[in-house]
Amino acid sequence: MLSILEKPPAWTLAVVAMISIQMGSALSIFLFDEIGPAGTAWLRLTLGAVLLWIIVRPRLRGIRSRDVPGLLGLGVATGVMTSAFLTALNYIPLGTTVAIEFLGPLGVAAASSKRLRAAIWPMMALVGVVVLTEPWTGKVQWLGVGFAAIAAIGWASYIILTQHVADRFSGIQGLALATPVAAVTAAFVGLPQAWGNITWSVIAWGLLLAVLTPVFPFALEMLALKRMNKHAFGTLMAVEPAIAATVGFIVLSQVPDLLYLVGVALVIVAGVATQRDSERDEIVVDLPASLESRRNE
Image (cartoon, rainbow, N blue to C red; front, side, top):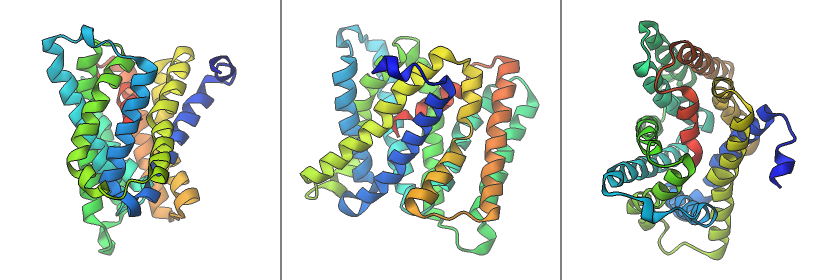
């Protein structure tokens, strides 16, 4: 199977991974009527944790006491990020949610840069978010925007904590160890929403979502990164808001207008520019690491 995946160009693997993530996000909405957005987040994280533990088989003996705070923080950040992201989808379009959440990694990358002009790119992305949400119309779902902003903060926290955990564990080991914590975090709100409505069909749907994200895209990205420069990978991944808008249009019939497309374009340009600056400055937090943190959403 892996040998088959190694044949296509590396960039196609990254694109398929992004499509898989956004398909998982879009299809999650179809569970909202059954178990709610927070319940969907909890179920997806729980089943994702089970799959990762089966695949990775993390070494518990390698965990030292000083590793525990980082793993717990990483898990809590993941749980909050995923729950907030899916809850935002209950109010605002997929492309809008992803664009707002994108402010998280852009902010971290800009804060880590040595160049003052790096602050321009998050501001550009923020302008893009304002354009695509069109607050002057008075029709903005501010609750959805608020949850997407919480997801952005969660993503930013995840980036910082991922780097801390990666100093002790390989990326997939840390992910496998932190995901159960994320599931428990999501359970505080998600389990009451889902309680009494969990059927075999819901579990089957949740299993599909867990495969779509994080398991399948994580495998594709690891293969892609073996054959791509990390900066090229990060630049390519900056188009994810556009993929989200496309998936939202095809799967959820969320038709974008011209202003919406302009806003998404501004966010993408900001992402690409941030990546270019990070390549020149060799900053500690680069955009590829920021984007890889989405895999558990």
